[in-house]
Structures are given as structure tokens and as C-alpha cells.
Amino acid sequence: MARTVTQVCSTEGCGKLAAFRTTTRPSWCLDCIDQLFRVGGLIPLEPFVDRKSYRRTECIACKSRLPYRFEYVLDQRPYGPVCRVCHWREWGEQNRARTKTELDQAVGAALQAPTGLSEADRELLATDASVRASVRRWWWPKERIQATVGMLHHDLLFDTAEHNDGMDPIAIKCLNCGYEHVELPGRLAAELSGHWCLCPICNNRNKGICASDVVVGFSSHGMSVAEPEAGTDTVQAARCARCETPRRISMRRLNRGAVPCYVCDGAADPSNPHRVYLFHFPDWHAYKVGITNSGNDSRLDRHRLAGGQLIELIEVPHRGAAFWVEQEVLNAMVPWPATGLPTDRAISGWTEMWDDSAPINVRLGDYIEAANAITLDRELIEDWKRNRSVRVLPSSDLILNRGDTVCFTGSGPEKSRAQWKMLAQGVGLRVAGSVTSITSALVAPPGGSPNAKVVAALSTGVPVISYQDFLAAVEGLK
Image (cartoon, rainbow, N blue to C red; front, side):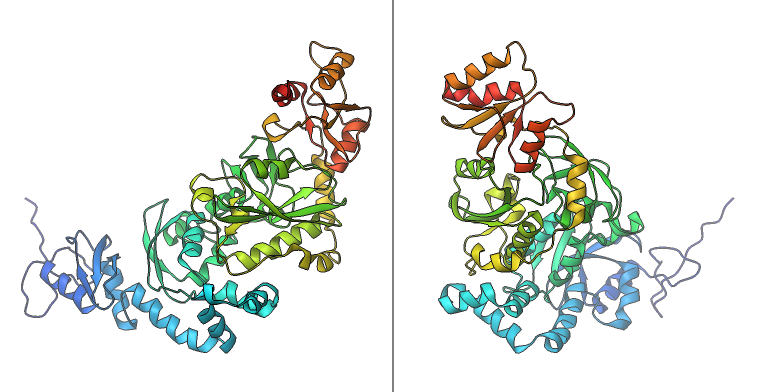
């Protein structure tokens, strides 16, 4: 008959039975385990299960409620606060005093009361490079933290500071595995770059660069990846989240200005002039910056239909220059992300928006001179050459008005070319024999090699739509 082996609590003089058995390490009874948690500064709020299980506690010093393993409590006690909030708060206080300059402190104090900023202060925030760098590094309002951890598949549990400068700890919960842990907001930018998972549990499981960060990176460009692979340079089998057009591209190339979707985002020659626009959406309390091809107003029309008001529109020499302007504006506005409706409904392009309460006044014209000196990356041209095959634009993305000019190529179903032209003229459209910069749309059958008209449309940014979608686009003109 097998004999039951028992183990006595390792606390001297206790004599009670231990809560778990081990042959290599001490073991304790339930009362002494609770006391060891308290010695570590934590009050247990849940029953003890085993030494490796997480147990919710309340910190005696800061009152934060987070789960910790008993093994971790034992290992951490000799090195400082067991509570991660207290640990990072001490670390932040030490490093804040060492790394923050007088400028950083002055900017932070000014942003705590943005309504009191003078026009001169707002001008400084918008134009001075050192001030802008200070804002990006040291200003973390709750909206910015929530938007950032949300993109990294986490929920914000609580923030420990009213005006966080990136050095005050926050508690977050992983949406993938449920792990609750403590971070510093100032470290989140590295995770957004796709270098590793924010969640240590998921990061250990993936044994390296986290594939979920790839999903985040692609989704910020309006793309989806069903089976992501780790690595910012890994070519992913992606699809446009709007029109389902497939695209093979790496996250690094997207971040360097490659066209996400050659259907929805345009197929113009990147070496041709591009435009950068600034819209205000009063109903969403947000501004939006974006890029569109010169001569193609369909995207501007879509934003107007969504309630947007065009504030400014500039033209720059090529897509690389336009992408640089867009990134400069977004870098300046990153502490004030759009919240509410754009994010709640996952509106396409919300990552290019910011809250209209931001104290910086954006003027695109201020960037033109520097944009003209930007060199176009040859990779953008090569990518365009590989992906400029005939792809038709969904009719929902095209708005035609009476007086617009259209052009036809190829064969349409059920009607001759002359009959299609008569249909267009009958609803008030003008029909041209060739594609120019004033052409509103080229109607073409999908597939096949690009002919001269299609190449001209791709080069000038003129939308290419199918005959069926042309019928849907003109339905409202009849």
C-alpha cells in the first residue's frame, strides 16, 4: 500500500502542513503564503491555487489590483517593490529627473492647460522641431494611451497619472491571452514598430518578433493579413480591407510610402505630381490628412460626402514628397489621436486623423519648400510597374456628376461602343476619345493587358471602372 507523503511548512516553528510539495525548494502553509505576500507589500484577494498560478492582489502602497504568481513574489522581494506599478513608478522618477530638460518640463506644463496657449505658443508647437520632438516623447494624454494600446491588441485598465509624460506606469490587459501587466507609455513606440509583442506571454509563445504586430501594421494602412508571419521585412499575403484586392508586400515597404491598394488608393505613376489634403470633420471632432493623385478628385468627393470640409490642398512633385508631408503632419499630431466615431466604427483612414482640440494649427503650405527637396525612392516606381495591371475601381468609390468627362475602351456587355457613349451623353456626361487630366473615369472591361488609354489613366490617376459599375455610378443621374 502506497504511503501518503506530507510536507511541513518551512516557516520555523509553524508546524502546519504545506500547501504544496516540492523536493528542491521550501514550501509553506496557506497562512504563511498569505503572510509572504504581505511582506512583499501585497494583500491577497483570491485563494491560493499553486505556486505558478496568478493570484489577484492589492498593493498596500499604491492600492493597484493586479495578479502575481507566488514564485514571482518570492524571487522579487530582495530586489525592490514586488508591485510592478511601484517598481516602474520609482524607475520613472529616477530617470525623469535625469533625462527631462527644462524645455521638456516647460512644454509639458503648457500642454496641461492647452486652452490658455497663445497663438505664438501654438505656432511654436507647430514649427519648432525640438518642441515637436519633446511633445512626441513626453506628452501621453489618456486618449493617446488608449489608442496606442488598442492598436497593440490591449485594453487600458488604469493610468497612474493625470498628465502622463511616458514615465508613469499604466496597467493593460492583452486581448489575445488575457494577461494583465504594467508598462510605461514611453516604451509603446517600439512595439508599434513591430519589433516585438507588447504582451510578454504572447511574445514568449511566438519565440521572437510577434506576428500580431504585423496585423496591426497592415490594418493601419487599410489592409488585412489572414495568416501573418513574423518580421517587418517579411512579404505578407495581404488583402485590401475595403475591396478585397490581394497584395503581396512587407510592412516596412508600406511604412515607406508604397501604395497599399492599387484599386482603392490609386494607381498613378508615383513620379507624377501628387496632392496632400487637409480635411476637418466637425461631426467627428477630427482632422484628417491624406494623399491623392493630381487630377483625381474622387477621394476628396468621398470625404465631402462624409461631412468633411476641405481646409487646404497642396501639390508636391511626386508620391515620395506627398508621403513625407503626410508623415510629418501625423508625427506632430500623434499625441492627440482621433477618438469616438472614427475608431468605434473602424472608419477607413482613422489612423490619419487627430482630435480637433489639439493645440497645434496645421498648415500644409509650410511643408512645400522642404517637400520639393525630397528624393523619390526608386522602389516606389518599381512597385508601381509590377502592380499597374488593369484593376477596376468599385463604383461605390466613384462619384460622377453631370458635365464630367468619361472615356471608353474595350467592349461592354450587351451594347455597342456607340450605344454606351449615347447612354453617357443621355445622362449629361461628356465623352472623350482619349484620357487626359480632366477625365473623371475610364470605363474598361476588367483583366487583360493595359492598352494606351489604360496606361494613360494609370499615369494620371484617372479611375478605371468596369462597364457594370459605370451603370451603377450613373443610376443617380437618370
